[in-house]
Length: 65
Image 1: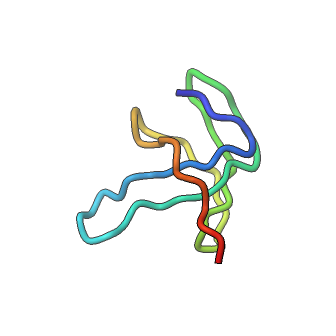
Image 2 (image 1 turned 45 degrees about the horizontal axis):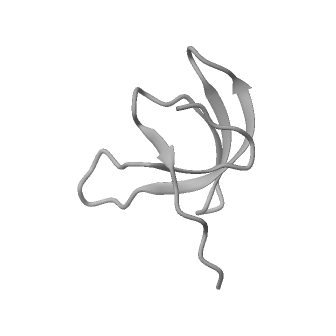
Image 3 (image 1 turned 30 degrees about the horizontal axis):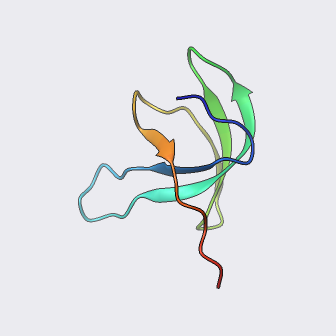
């Protein structure tokens, strides 16, 4: 699945003790076949993320406080 800037995404944790990580794609740094995304995570961090096959998926809209 290909994502675009503004999409909310979710990354499943590799540990059963950690919840999924969610955020918003700020920029598509590189497109397929090896996509890279600049993501602002909901925890306040930002990173360039290169997903493994099936690791990145769409997320529910953020809940308003």
